[in-house]
Length: 402
Ligand SMILES: Cc1ncc(COP(=O)(O)O)c(C=O)c1O
Image 1 (cartoon, rainbow, N blue to C red):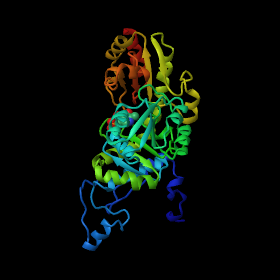
Image 2 (cartoon, rainbow, N blue to C red):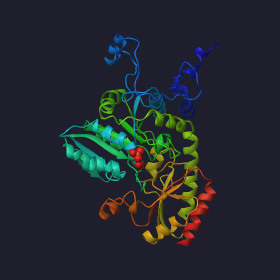
Image 3 (cartoon, protein in one colour):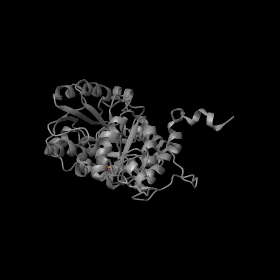
Image 4 (cartoon, helix red, strand yellow):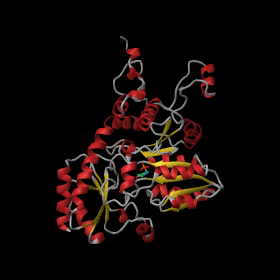
C-alpha cells in the first residue's frame, strides 16, 4: 500500500469539485494547507548562468518577473484549466483584458472577424469599434441563426467571436455549429462563457478554440476583485495569448489570483445553489400577470429551448424578464425591492437587478437596443445565495407596487 500508487493521484480521475480545492496546488517548504500568496514582482537567481538559462526559457516553470508569471497566478490558471478541460490558460487583470487580448492574439491588419451582435457592451466595442481602428474589419450577425455566420464569412475571416447565453436577453448561439463553420474557413472560434459558467457549458468540448471568462463574476462570486482568464490548447495559449499578455502587461495580480482561488473552492456549491434558485424564480415570474415574458434557457418558453437542453447542462444563474408597463414599471419594481440590490455586476452572492436600457446598454442607440431585445421594460436578474423564498417574496412585493 503506498500513496504513490493511488489512482486519484491522476488529476483526470478527480471530479470538478475535488479539482477546485486541490488542483494545481504548489506547496512551499512550509507545507501550508491554504494556497500560498506570493506577493512579489521579481525573483532572484542562484547564479548568472541560472538567470541566463531562465531568460532563454530553458528552465520549465521558472519565474523571472511577475508580469510574465507568478506562482499564485500559476495555480489559478492550472485550477481553471482542470475545470475547463483545457490544456492551458492565462489569467488577466479583468474579463475585458482577457477578451481583448484573446481577440488581438488571433488577428492582424487585413483580417476580418465575424461576431454575434448580442454581446456584452465592452466585447461589442472591441470587435465593432476598436479592432477596425487597427485594420481588422468585423461583421456582426444575429447569432440565433447559424446560417448568418456562414453567410458573413470572408476569405480573410480569421476569427469568430460569440457569447452564449447573451447579456442581457439570454439568447443562445449554437456553439458546435458555429465551430464547424469557423473551422471550415480556417478561422478560430472564441466563446465568452461567463453567463453559462464552466460548470454548465463546455465550449471546448463543442469545438471552441479559446474560452474566456470574466472571473469577476461567478469565479470570485463575492463581489471582491476583478479578474479574467483565457483557456484553450497549449499551442494557442502558450504562443499567441502568452506573448501578448507579456507585452501588454494586462496581468492578473497575485493578490487577486489568491482571492479567486478561494472563490473556486466554493464555486460549484454556489453556482448550483444559485441556478436552483434561478429556476424557482423563473417559475414564479412566468405565471405572473404583470410579466410580459420571462427568459430563462431551461424554461420551456425559451425560443431556443431545444438548443439550451442540448448545449447547457442546466439553466444559468441569470433570469431576464419584461415587466408590463415599460420603463416606469421596471423602475417601480426595482425601487420597491428590499433584498435584491440595484447594481450591474452578476454572479455575486448577493442578488442583483439591472435595468439594461438605462445602465449597461445605455450607450447603444435605441435601434440597436431593440434589435437585441433590450426593451424599456426589460430587467436582468442575477440570482445570489439568499433563500429563494425571500427572493420570490421580494419580487412579488415589487410587482404589487407596479
Ligand atoms: C459576458 C461578459 N463578458 C465580459 C465581461 C467583462 O468582464 P470584466 O468586467 O471583468 O472586465 C462581462 C462583465 O462585465 C460580461 O458580462
